[in-house]
Image (cartoon, rainbow, N blue to C red):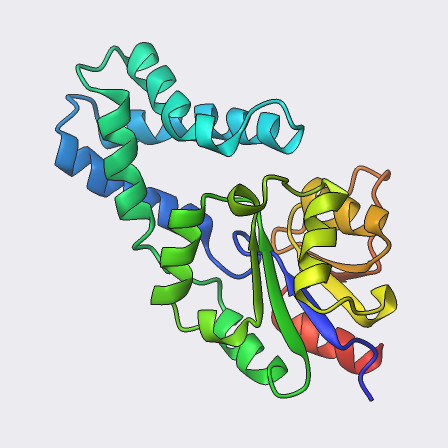
Length: 231
């Protein structure tokens, strides 16, 4: 019998290649909106602004709904663009929802795990974008439960989003669930504080801050299979 019954996955940076998705969506926006700035300028400014806002979101200081337009309001102001932030947001989210780029090995990993484990997804993101990407991608069919922060009203690392996931999963025992994610604070610390064992997906070989402990660490997605066999 496997050591875990459920594998609870994060989405972006764990299974989906969000960096590639963002670049593609911004490139499409740049073409659609004719903003009068280079694609590189747009991408650099947007990533900095968006990253700062999502960190505030994880800390509970701003809603995901507010981020949708606020990041483009700041972008328009900083780059002095002749554009409507609401329209830019609408165009961008439409393009982002079409992006289904996966990290190497993600599809094969889920196909390998699905016969043995029950799979669930828990993501801090915008519902329309994440639902669209899952429906279009080859991996969405593997998840029995999908929890999206915008739909729930709580975001990782808040324990309430994990509690919501457990309710949808039928209330499994915590030792039967492994959380797999790339974000040390949202995924690993959040799940750890909720009482779950964790696997940090550290594809870039980052150093920990020494304050957040993880049960397992994977440097490639294929490592997870070996970890599960040895657990």
